Length: 109
Length: 115
Image 1 (cartoon, helix red, strand yellow):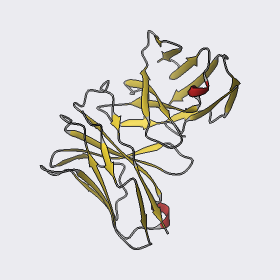
Image 2 (tube, rainbow over the protein chains, first blue to last red; image 1 turned 90 degrees about the horizontal axis):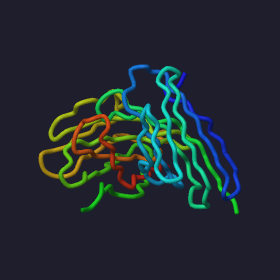
Image 3 (cartoon, chains in turn yellow, red; image 1 turned 45 degrees about the horizontal axis):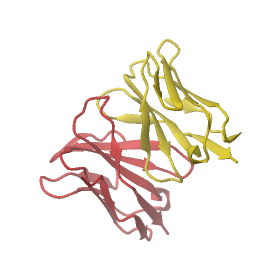
Image 4 (cartoon, chains in turn blue, yellow; image 1 turned 30 degrees about the horizontal axis):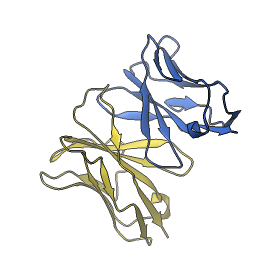
């Protein structure tokens, strides 16, 4: 079983749609949680950190459920530029990150 | 303030040759991480280094792969006697601290193709 599991998609949505991605992690010792974005096999870029209290950054909302070992990302009012692969990432200690394989989002006009 | 710099961007090697990948961390960052991304897969941790020290190499294959981060100069990931299965994107990241909530900054990556 992979340490971080994501639905690979692709999620094909029209502009303006709301889309949600989910991710589960297996190691209960995980301490930090992130969503990264990767475009066309370029370098991954941090989208946002994820906290138990939930956090929002503009159109993006992330949520962590430690009891269920579940992380989510909600994107509202999707834009064409949101098309990318979204990587769920956890860290047990330091900055040794464990990446999910990614969820592909395609936003179409 | 330049970001993490990796070179070369693309590297082609024939089977059996050596590949050397370079990574210069962001200014002020003393922690370097190497990750590998195979086609259609997620990034996998390989090694974590601080200046002149390998801290965690649990993700490195036991043979043919080595990494260093000398006192002066970039970090080097070295792959000896490359095989087709080494073809991948190799990303380097750096951070100023080891705090788990300190985000990693990734370089553009080196795409290695073994023919």
